[in-house]
Amino acid sequence: MEPLIERILSAIARATALINSLMLFGRKKQAQQHSDIMISDIVNSAIMLVKLMVPKNIEFIYKTDLTTEKIHGNKFEVEQIILNMVNNAIHAIGDKFGCIEIKILKDEQQRECGFQI
Image 1 (cartoon, rainbow, N blue to C red):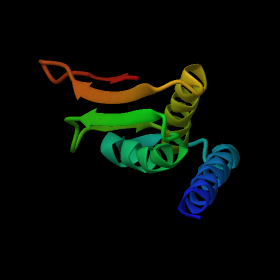
Image 2: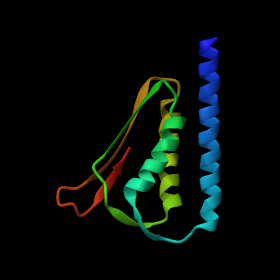
Image 3: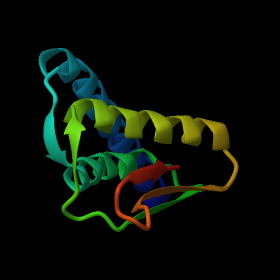
């Protein structure tokens, strides 16, 4: 019985992630404004959704050294980019075992930050 419950909970989590993703897409039309936003807030919000999307055959790793850095952009667009990239990685891995690692790190001179998946 436990495997069935786990599969149901996993399906619920994926459905929740999908609905949230669709809601982000819908909000994009109403929130086209750009502003200064903390990158860690955006990424942490997207990571919560990502963790629900990643199936058990894929290991998920998230690394960052950003805490107070800001970017000028649209929060919903950045979240959607992260979700799309992870979704593409999930589909590329398929049913095989794999790993998705997201790194968001500053360069040595702390002038820029980069996003790597």
